[in-house]
Image (cartoon, rainbow, N blue to C red):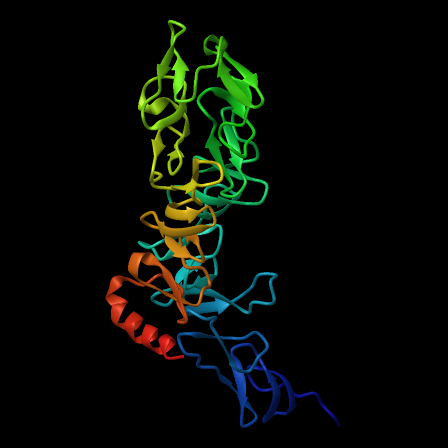
Length: 333
């Protein structure tokens, strides 16, 4: 008479008592029997597989992923040295919308949910439709500020403007008390009695008085009272005329103004081409970034990303020997 006999221990399906065809999780078939899997520290036993599952890249210790995301079979518990942990994943450099915390080697989300690039102290780049206003991402700039569409930042209007729409800081929409709006410019009501010659202004005694020598036109006698500048000089947001614009701005030969560089940029010759970034940021493709994001580069002098070599983080000056070696290889191509 035929009888159903139990399979051997840890065997789910078998063809005979000594011939298992499917083992319980954590076991594999060896010579018809189920033996326990012995996985290394960077592996974990699968639920159905008869082999150990390797942990994802950068992970030192993991477990089976029990979440609904079946694309990722493992969840990391501990990352390898040099990797940052973010949730159950390990990263060479923290992804967008996060910043690295070196003390714990973890990635922390940006404080502002609309911030795409940040560090622990502030946001440097906002989502589309949002603008950087002193480190916060906003949909509209507050009164007295306008949207710089190139830098995606809220920039201050001219001090005579109550509100302005850009693209220049003196394209006024409304004026402060004592000023009259005329063709987008706020004019001092007291000084509109009669026009003085160029390089002069009308003073409180209703007389024409010379501007400061650095000004082409002005509204008062001091050097910080310029309205326009002579050829080869540029007007700063502080109403002074300079031959070299302050840090973070560049001389726009078309407008005659010191226009702002991109966010985080210290030195530039035009808005979209930064040459040097502020401390803590790195130069990549003309823009200042917190990390060298997915570039093929090595970061050396002045924290500049120089292409031709894989890198995920900007290297220190101690890698100068690598740079010289690579630059010689590139120059011989």
